Image (cartoon, rainbow, N blue to C red):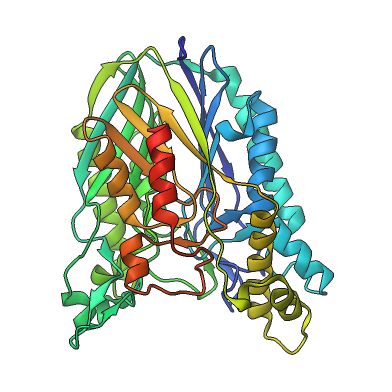
Length: 431
């Protein structure tokens, strides 16, 4: 366990250039910058190796790109890559980075179709430099703050039961204009926005907010944006610029704003207000306790890759190299093959936990379903468990056993049944 805690804070602009693809597959590339994409992070310092928490306003960071971010940041601050908790917020009008996939596309003559390598490397280097520079201004941490508040009318589960009794996962992010989708119950969600804060005496330094929902109101029109969760974060930052505000998306693969969002600008602003209200209420409910130790644990996690023929190496390579196949399908094939190659190589996912005494921060991979966030809380009911999603994102959606049984299917699903057992075993080790 670690002592003599200090924290440093950093922020970096990581806005993509115009003409850059968003979400990996969206047909409309970036046309305008509505909001600047940002990276916000902290470094926790003690007599153990530093722990870094990094939140990026990007859709996903996967495979080689995820390793690149962690390795460069770790080297900059003097720690191990496993101790860099890197998380994308998962806004869709933002990039997907997967170095292996981009290399496959480059060899097929599709240079820069997934993401811009030079831009990506520039972001990595600038974030690492900012993290290193922040160490000069590290501030003592004497207290830990814990607060939570219910968020009203934002989250709803994708899963609905149709009039004929069939289960569907069709309630997407902006489906609230459909009366049936709007009237269906919320389903399984985690209604609580959780805030962990670090203090020096009575002076608040950092607020880490998390809530489980997909962070999109509307997307795909070419307007780069941090969407309603970023809007709420920025409004909260303006309340008191001395507090470093960080928002992290919870486990929300199957949770969207679908019931309460019709895809309009007005809905985006209303959703932002509701998240902001949750942040302010969690802050008001915060209770402080002295902190003198921080622990860190991580365990390797291996998830089953899909076994159907269309996920075989030969099929995918043929798709990538076939000029007659639509470009976005070739990009998808490259992302799939990149992940397959990673799994075949035997490289697991890291499942890290930061132990703060009465609280835990656990970083889940990909689009873990909200059931995993609920599971983590049920495993440690006496602790304040803050679950973060969208760490290593190669798995895409990670359904629970129940959702696999309901025949959940999507093009963004790269794992097969059996994930819940493996994640439960990993959580038992680290929580």
